[in-house]
Amino acid sequence: MSALDWIILILFFSCLVGVVLWVIKHKKDDTSDYFLSSRSETWLAVGAAIFAANIGSEHLVGLSGAGAESGMAMAHWEMQGWMILILGWVFVPFYSHSKVFTMPEFLMNRYNKNTSSTLSIITLVSYVLTKVSVTAFTGGIFLQSVMGINFWYGAIGLVLLTGIFTVLGGMKGVMTISVIQAPILIAGAFTILLLALLKVGDGHIINGWHETVKYASSNGMTNMHLFHPKGDMWYDKFPGLSVIFGASIIGFWYWCTDQHIVQRALAAKNLKQARKGTILAGFLKVLPVFIFLIPGIIAAALRAKGILIFKDNNEAYGSLVSTLLPMGVKGIVVVGFIAALMTSLAAHFNSSATLFTIDFYKHHRPDASEHRLVVVGRLATITVVILGLVWIPVMKSIGSVLYEYLQNVQSLIAPAIAAVFLLGVFNRKITPKAGEWGLLIGALIGLFRLVLMVFDPGSHFDQAAQKLIVDPSLHTGIFAILKINWLHFCIFLFFFTMALMVVISLFTPKAGEQQLQGLTYFSQTPDQIRETRESWSAVDVITTLIVVGICVAFYIYFW
Image (cartoon, rainbow, N blue to C red; front, side):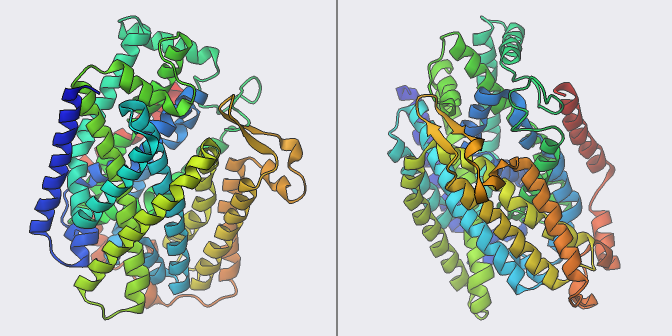
């Protein structure tokens, strides 16, 4: 980092202060403004905010590291642009019609309070122990590899700065910085991609691509591991069509039901803006494979040539940034990346505060004033910041082992939640008790496997090899469950939860028509159907088909 780069960084932080002051000057002291930006955002802000909420250090560090490790295998989880379209076309109308702030609030309307509380607890715990801490942990690694900042200063500083920004700026501040950050991030990432291709191709981009493909082919990294059970070193981890089904279940949970994503769509001023915003996010979601994962593969190729030096694959992207970018440009790109880390972290802070305030505090204090609810939301954000800081030393001590575990955590959280939302919206015969017990039992089964993973006697982290070593022969007794491939377990848990809900529905009272009105696909009112139909146009359909076409073309190319 040169003096010019640091000056650019200082100007960025000055811009953050300006955004906070602007928000404070124009803020309304109510929950709609603090948690949902007064439901006044346009499609551009919504699309940028959804993309920014998704892009965090798990991409700058984790996805690039995955590219350097296994090539295109993890692309399944990134080619989910089509799943964001389902959020805009199918689920946002139900969330919007019910006027909810949170996803647990929607489940309370569809099922009962116990279902809502269960989802809130699952979401809050997962945010604190995975989302917040992982972003801080891997963010510290990125800042250390690019800027030379001590890991602890980088991780703690990132959490504290983002916490202050979220407490003062609320959702409007997050949405505003997302619009500024997204184009800088995309432009900077493409700059790194082009420079990396030039470097590995000795000054020629096309030659660079051929060299990258040549390196990837020789290391079994060029396909998405769909139908290669023999001779494919990654097939056991990413087996056949299970990758597509497993990634889709996780994608549905993340893009259509997870609070920190859906909350951005609910901030739109109307259904039309929300849908257009999700379509824009669908286009943007196609980019991470090209701007993060493929550069990870290029970094591995450059390491093989002796041009880059890094031991841990998590340092792949940071090595590209620190080595390839010229003075000044590096500062601009780093600004975009820090803004991406902050908006992703801020999204989790704000969503955690929303969940606690609306689903717990307001439930027990229904007469609380709007001012009081906003204050509680700020205190909840501060609490999450503190808990995230407390968890960082644990992340640091366990290191890459926990990061390996976290790749599987979402496959244990997603199935039960996805099943409850999917059946809840499309099957009016599913009863409140079925939703309650389906979510609880499905979550407990996932938690049970997670506990076994944490205490797995058959795994250890080899510091010399910088990789997780698993010995399946030690998976005996109750640990034999871990012999089941994690994607197969994800699919099993999803269908098991749905079957359990159907069986329970046969023996428990159904919800009344008044409760279901507007909450399921087959109980919408004529006015709601008309409002939904009037919210889309031919342009929306065409752009949606283009996103789907891009995703299909990608799968065909890397088949």
